Image (cartoon, rainbow, N blue to C red):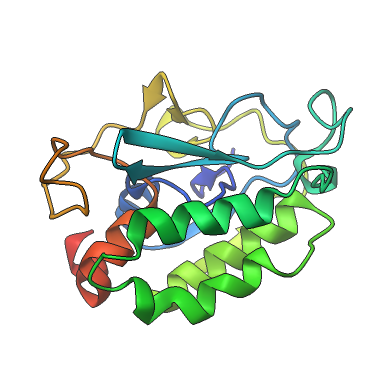
Length: 202
């Protein structure tokens, strides 16, 4: 039976994703062989906006939503999502304390055209860990592992309706003057607002 925790690969994952990884000492497997589930953080991220939560969704090539392994799902560029996502991040976080600190490192992800969703998400995840000065031990699944203890299987614990439970302490957010604290947004919300304190927060 699988002995390492298995995590899905998300686009700009929520904060709880990283707290769960920390619980496993930043040593984990990334699921590469699963079929892409619909409407999950694998292809969307949630950030803070003046009106509350804002979802950023990655479009994938038609036909990728069913029976396509995660590693084979291709990004679609029929719509200008890169420009839209980057403008949304700029608009929502330009006034945050640390946006300019991370801006130059993040913008290339919205200029380069990646073929595969998996590759895009992996490089983004590596960039995030680097910003937090964390060196995780990450491996990838070779086959889809179905025999795994519940406490080690995080593949279905971060959906909109089934969020990994974690006590989340409030921190200052950009629109805290008009919105109540919104827990478990994308890790970039924490980075842009807390900067180098992000690792300590986790």
